[in-house]
Length: 450
Image (cartoon, rainbow, N blue to C red; front, side, top):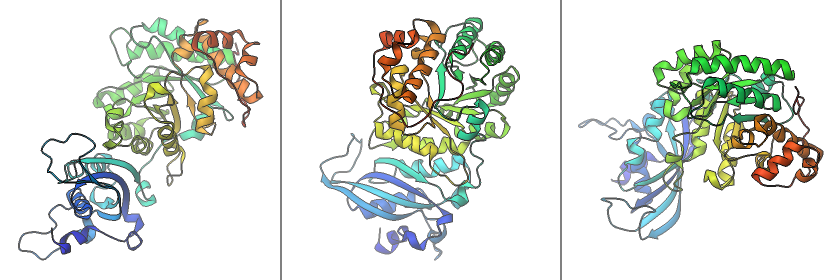
């Protein structure tokens, strides 16, 4: 590639119209000159061949993706981070590349956006086989073409009438195998104990032994009884993940039966399908994270999970369940906090989505999650911590509320447990933790209200 050719894939960011470009941050490992590799990279994901044979036209000024920043992180490495078949020989350079990509190339269409920034041109660019999309920044002009969450954090709080604490979810367990009758009773007991939201597991779909129609009918009725008993609004979060052609019908069935929030596994269904459902739905949509880890877990290859958080918010999810803190979830604390920020940070006119970091939580982990998130605007989502409690889901949910009351009061978990048998049983079953003085106050609907 001649200098006159590759220079067309570089630009001064200040000289570009910021409304016309999305900004992409990539990690890149390449052979040879990083500038040439970055130019190839931009070419492959935008114009590729930028003129017709025999023509003097140049399509790059309007259509080319362009490098606006290139930093070499490491030079002269003996090989790539991962074994690459058929890779050419030579020293490897590790780089951070920031690219301005004109969104007019694909428009406000999520499948086309992903095809451009995560497609063939990105992951099959010559000489650069190791690539990770680290972040995506969308201008307000582009964001204005999307609806985003219908409710967002404030809307969820309005529906539940909870304004001064986290929202408490619970994953009904056992998650697979129960008939609707037994399943609904577990949800009812958890609401009585103080959960705001009882949810289907992401693995539980419209099954033969627990069909969505019957399950949502029983859980919808149980939710209403729990609201009457406690005086507090509740959500039944029904999983409607299925083939795209069934989503609208399953939405209609579940909502008509009393499900007042819906769970969708975002990536297996597809973000475009979620956006379609968002336009139809009149209840909150909650995302779950299957099929994200295979893209995001390798440190130097794939797509960073915060990109998925931003795109799920863009597609219209009111809350986003994500891998949380702790060893089991294989995510660093920094990564979890980055995903939380992707849900809550300003994003044009797009409303914030409630971040719900989860994984093996119970009453004793609530303080740690709260401290690490740094805000009350999050969802706390135990499974066995509520439904594996020795006093049943009512006792498990009560232990969560008691743990939050301890945070508000600035007392240790042990002190609080001395006054509450449910919390004491949780500590004996799941472990122990200490409570430090907090900054926030407790919620209005407290504890076991029946």
